[in-house]
Image (tube, rainbow, N blue to C red; front, side, top):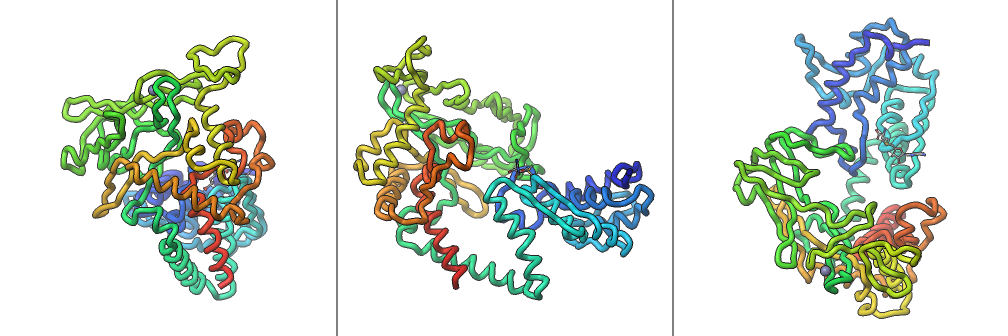
Amino acid sequence: MSSFLESPKFPVDIVNQAAEKEKKGGGRPEHWEMVFWWTRKPLASARAVLAAAALPPDIDVHTFVTQVLKAKVNLKGQVENVPHRENPSPPPEWRERFAKMKVLDPFAGFGSIPLEAMRLGFGEVVAVELLPTTYVFLKAVLEYPKWAAERGLGEQLVRDVEKWGKWITEQLAGDPDIKELYDPDVAVYIGTWEVKCPHCGKYTPLIGNWWLARVSKGSSEETEEGEEEGAKKKIFSRLAWMDWENGAIKIVDLNKELKTSEIEAKVNSKQGYVVVNGTKRTVRKPNIYARRETGTCLHCGNQIRYISLKTGKHSIEKPKGAETEWYIKHALKQWNQLLEDYLNGKIDLEKLLQSPARPTLLVKVKVKRGDLEFEPATKQDTEKLRKALEKLREMWSDPDIPKELTEPYCSSTYHTIVWGFDKFYKLFNPRQLLTLVKLVKLVREAGKK
Ligand SMILES: C[S@@+](CC[C@H](N)C(=O)[O-])C[C@H]1O[C@@H](n2cnc3c(N)ncnc32)[C@H](O)[C@@H]1O
Ligand SMILES: [Zn+2]
């Protein structure tokens, strides 16, 4: 059975334009701003594809564009509106057709496809998702608004979400533990692991990506996973990265340096260089490659490779026959075990902090006058992570701390487990864990209220 989707009359150009308008800055659906999600499909194209797949090949294209897609197209063939902002209003016979059909989206993600299927009035819409977070988002996007709207409670739901969202945020920000652990003017902390170098004995951070900002003009901030820029000349509104100097993180902020919000530059993020005004600047390559089982100490420049599980000695080549492990993996596993021992009251904080691997902070990001400002994290900042450990230990018997094994939820070869992250609480840094546990309590309290 063929459909309008397969017909040469299907208005691909218009659907593309509508989708592009939606994804570019300013056109995104409001609910997308709740959270970042990968490869979300534009509502316009989801709607067009669903409806076209359900309609016969010989339908009227104009009706499709104006009543289903809701695109306002000018005489030059350009879409002038952001179509997803309007609900579709298909002719009754099309609606009847949709009402007899079921839509199943087995990889629903953030739910663009099932949402549009519902707006088109398909008879039954089923969304399936593997990740618990997404499952909750799907409920918020697909179920609750519909439930409320059907009972005339739509407006109230909006007001309630606003009111209680604000309440939760205020309570959390006002919590004395949280206040003590965060600086009020820091929007984002960028952290990583540091390991004790087996050569020089100093702790070196492990940095897989030295970039802080690489925003070119006209691109939407949400890039597809794995997207890479070539070395073409472009205008950048923001270019900043981290460097390492005298044993510490240094910030290179080109906008600040050149005092401009428009930098014409050639950037190759993979090879790590930036060319501005004929001068080539290098951005460091990662000092950790997990797949190749290598790391490099930023202090002494030596490679970090294998540790003998018998003698504890480090070697660059993997010794034949001897039982060895990549030092960095070994160090992280040790942190995870020592963390558990510390929280269970078996060892003290000093012992935990002697672990060959431990979480650390690199950079603080502040928002000043609508712009990002980067600062290297200080000892006092890292100290706050440690303070969170003490607070966690005090509340260790709390049932909201997720101490369950991760294993039943993912295969034993799943990559977090081989690094020693065998329980859910180990997946967060101490401050994140403390904050999230408090957030869970507040969400529950708001629900009761
Ligand atoms: C590319 S995203 C889908 C995006 C979605 N179409 C949207 O517009 O938001 C793919 C989704 O499939 C989910 N997924 C992957 N494998 C799955 C499985 N076996 N069962 C259910 N969901 C799965 C992933 O968690 C991810 O959210
Ligand atoms: Zn070293």
